[in-house]
Amino acid sequence: MTRKKTTKKQRRKRLSPKTDNQSDYIRAISENHITFCHGPAGSGKTAIAVGLACEYLLDQKIEKIIVTRPVVESGGGLGYLPGTMEEKIQPYLVPIMEEMRSYLPRNILESDSIELCPLEYMRGRNFHNSFMILDEAQNATLEQIKMFITRIGWESKAVINGDPEQTDLGESTGLDECLDRLEGLHGIGISELTDEDIIRNDIIAKILRRLQ
Image 1: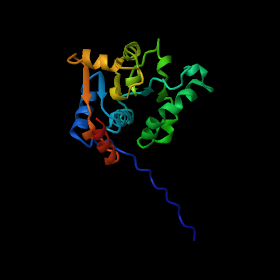
Image 2: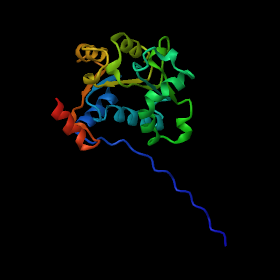
Image 3: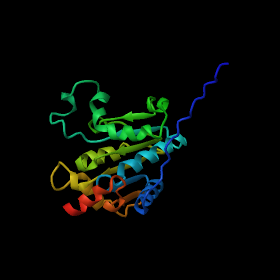
Image 4: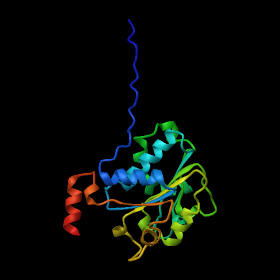
């Protein structure tokens, strides 16, 4: 007697806000063309943006997810790193890709529906029917954020998130400028997450409170 093999269907993660601020963040993204989110590490800035982008893609509300971030750690710039453009930026986007793997099947992850695009290489492009994410925006200049925003096309959304307290650029950043000057503008959402929204190990919130 031959035993019939059964295949276990992989269970996909569903986006579920853990705090009121995270719920407000999701609402801001849903109701606006462009959303800025600032808050400490572990508060859900990236996780919420990625989770919602994946749900939009699975629900066919968009055709593509665009992910980028400024690369400041390389010193000499991306041109000095070995490999193709995507291989150069891949190490900087590992946390986002790991989050996406819990939402999306492999065939989508490996398709043209996901694009990793270095911020430095976005000039001159336009993204229609897309969900654009600029991660670690505290390390982007105002000119870089303006360039990113102007890439947004028809039927698209953009999320720009970061922690101004962890910038490598100095006292004033492009993210700070945008948070100050774009508040109240129709079509722009601004969300703030705090250490109360940290959903990783509880010790992170305790450490951040003590070090303030």
